[in-house]
Length: 195
Length: 423
Image 1 (tube, rainbow over the protein chains, first blue to last red):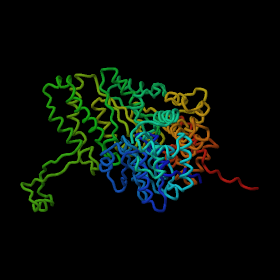
Image 2: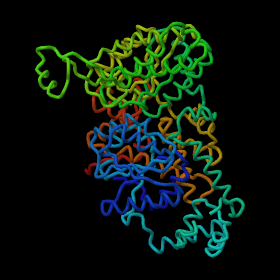
Image 3: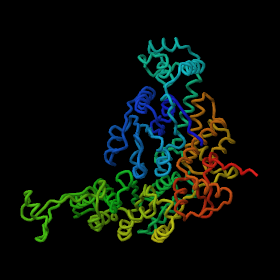
């Protein structure tokens, strides 16, 4: 059976940042430690998008309650969590109210394993907003290994033709761009304090 | 950190180039913004919007349905129709996405009328000409009636002597045989019953329409979002009372409807018969010669990162579903960007088509997969079968005409094939 692409959380956040203010994507929660993973996703989103990220539980929620939560405020990032999974009626109801879910800030659907089938089956209008942007959170919840960290630092260094030390120095004197790649770079160097 | 840019020249321009591309291909962007940005090809569906709008304009009280699958471009056509009507100067076109304001998953006839009433009321109270022509019309009274109907009200009602609730209610301090009852509004979800007569809003609507017709010739109401009611029977139960009254009021209606209205057995036909016109917005077949889908990509600046033969590949994988076309282009650019490539490659397109197809595959049982494989091999498909309507509604099967059905190409590329039997 074909599977969705697995991406670390910072990569998911980076994709969302590229999608712009009204981006939508879905993340399949890992089976183990999903609460910790959700916290981590929230942190990555705040760091990369440089805006607050909230978690909203889809169940229980009424039309009015969800509307209020999504639109007050409507420009931060929200993670709509399906918890342990939603019933088909709930997906149908969410699908019907898709227009009401549209907002200025990005939306991430945090889905339990069985939810993608229900999303496709009972919420085709919501699914169409997401397209192919459905990703699996890695089994480690998106935490990078040391090798992955070093590889990413090397990529960034080659791409921007800067060394790690130069990036830190520029950040310290306020000359570094606030583009997400530089934020990511500082976080990977454990210098998130300079962001 | 300040927002100064210190990366070498060329690096951030690559990011800017990708970002501009990705923003132009945003499947979640509202069509009004896309039209405003000039990214829409207006005659993509042979100026369908003009035909819908012209009929609504020429035949007051006419009722037209725009039927199409998810992501086929219905809202864009409706918004273009509204713009065309507004440009004629004599008609007041009203566009309402009902699902934005009310929970249509509850069974709520009256919601369409309430939405129209609120819009007309707001228009009359803010338009100088309408104000001047309203004469003796009691606008505050009309306003109150409309809002009560939409959002609900409290009313005193007498308790009949035989009503066994009397003692119970009196025990709670209700005097004079009167009780206060809450009458729910039509736009306040959820509400439980159909106890109120829908004609209650007829008089205030007639008064508002009379004022507007002094200033403009007529009103055309465009209801979007009703296609979210995927099942034909549900769609009909929500709209039919409202549409009956709108015809009586000689207000032209253009409304969206789900594909099940066209292809569902029984009730679908009944619904179609009710309307003066049912327009099907079918999927656009990918055709490298006519290049219609390719022109959608070009209009949004697709050539910036896409070689023409790769654009063909995206068009093919989309199956002609416009929102999937937009999504695939966006996702391919995103993939190329995070992979540090300077433009989109064939591998990026394959990967994102696989992602899209995998989504469509989720939840399909062996029977549905068998139906899809049979459709692929024999080209035969009976859309009136309940399970097959589901395949249409979820876009796993695409309708190019009333007789031409095909499996979504992205889905087809990931469907597991049965092992060939060994001799």
